[in-house]
Image 1 (spheres, rainbow, N blue to C red):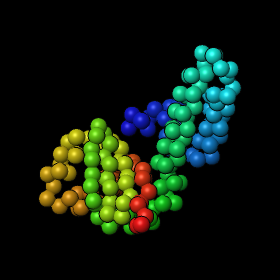
Image 2: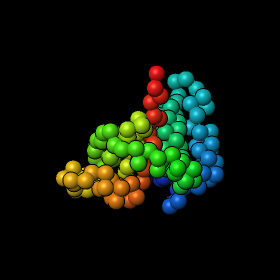
Image 3: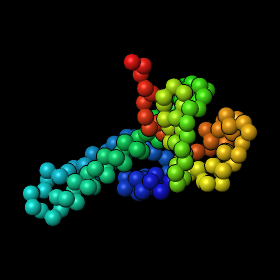
Image 4: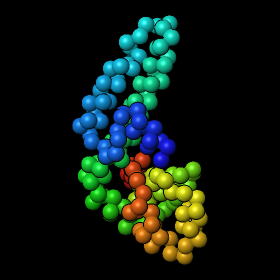
Amino acid sequence: MKRINEYKKLFGVEKEIDLTILKKTYRDLVKQWHPDKFQDGDALKVEAEVQSRRVIDGYHFLVSIAPETLAANLEAYNETINEGIADYHHKGLVLEITFVDGSTYEYFGVTPPIYQKMINSDKLTRFFKRTIYSNYVYRKTKKSLEPA
């Protein structure tokens, strides 16, 4: 959640993420912090490189959790979660789930007590469907692996 809030603050997003406004803000920030705007040896050039990378990462992150993006990919997401879970990892407040088809999703805001309940659940798939899938902000992080 900290990462989401940090990027929302960077882009001036209040609540819902609107892709058209996000894209305009992204373009403005890239123009402001593009490293080519600064001369070599300028103290701001290094900061511009860091900020420009942060703006690019933030833009891609916010686009991946935008309601429009999630709605466009909902059918594929539903197919993936019904395939089954291959592996999962919890770090901080982020739960990363790798599914049988090779897709990996991150779920944000999953607290340690919820994770503990998940581990102790005798019906893991049911727990995921009732508690994780519908209640947490998520994004796809890795594409499924294509068979060779």
